[in-house]
Image 1 (cartoon, one colour):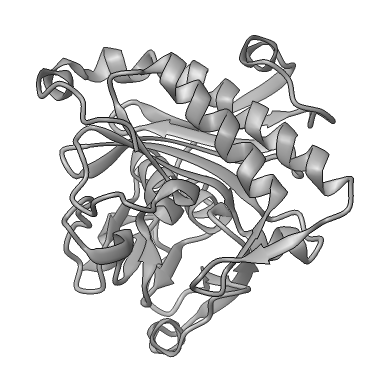
Image 2 (image 1 turned 30 degrees about the horizontal axis):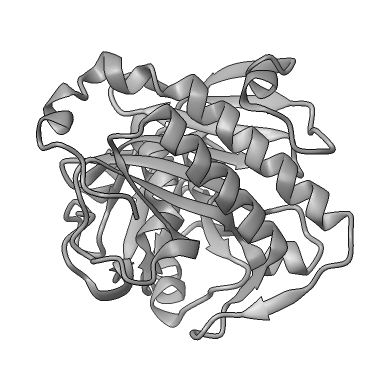
Length: 290
């Protein structure tokens, strides 16, 4: 983690200043995604962290690109990456970038395409901007709270490119919005994790009639809430702040809400060991909570 920013930086991050970060961060996510794809084409060497979770050369390559890019784009804002948390304090600077260079490493190792590169900007303890790229799918979701969200389809690039080149990719941009709750007893779709299923989330879904489950990997679950393909994503077991911060911002920017299991707002950077959030639920339609 870089040194803490000047305390006046947070105040200087008004909506326009945050919006100015969107294109550079989008280019950075595309560039990191290209590096991940380049690693996937070669021999895959998988190591394991102390908690047993896998880490690959792709995680580390994307991490290097993103951390270096953030230092260029916004040198006064601290950054925390999943791959660089040793020695970081859970009580983070504010504002702060939260980075997951490769979310869904298990999907990546298994040869599936549902892995993502995630960058979020957190200010005031809540995500205000998020970019989530799924390089193997040629899709990217991004959003700024208060200014809307978009899904971008782009041509996946076969090798790492510079940020400037990534900004000039041919792409199709679609404004996205969460969809209205279908109503009690009507069919609705809940996103469930392929790799991290838990009993509390299963019980939450089972208690709501009309549920259809859609199995997805990584932060794509949050993005599908944001673009209206999924109604809700409950994760009532621990997850890390960098896993969901970018998708959280995209969901809220698209009209949804992200809470804890009791319906309270999630707060980031609150001194939890390991940057862990105990639980979360992403609701496409806030009215569904009533």
